[in-house]
Image (cartoon, rainbow, N blue to C red; front, side, top):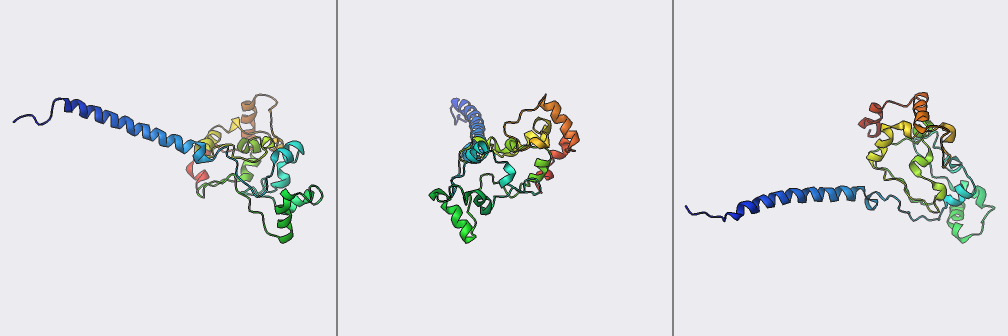
Length: 219
């Protein structure tokens, strides 16, 4: 029986299979990079808000403590968006006629909440408790970055699971004394990890196996 395929068909088949494997690996790498890119995670992207609230001015210039506006971070599973009355504590006297703040005044007059755009919005399948993290010595800037340098608020980190696990695997690198939780630009008075290991024990932080267990964050 005569040969159907040319001898070069064997080489072509090998090259095709070899190339297909590399192409699939390349496409997988592209998908992985897209999934971790700011385009997907929205990291460092400024969200448009009904009122251009500046953390630089309120936190950096005026020195307002995070808890003045976000009053429930120490006691609740979620960080509250401050009610309009909190804004009006100052703005009934300061910049009281500013056109930029008309949505704030209108909200106060009508009792209708301002429709702020969430910057940190975790999926529904992720359980995150603000009070636990704050009371265990995780600083605001650890997750939210230097908000005192943000004229408009953006998402500092990717919020992907790998980012969360970095902290859960080595909490001693991130925890700080509770009195410095809201301090921006915190610098420890000594070796950070040595202090962190002491605080991990003092604050009763769970072992790494528990912290990285699936049901710790997915319930």
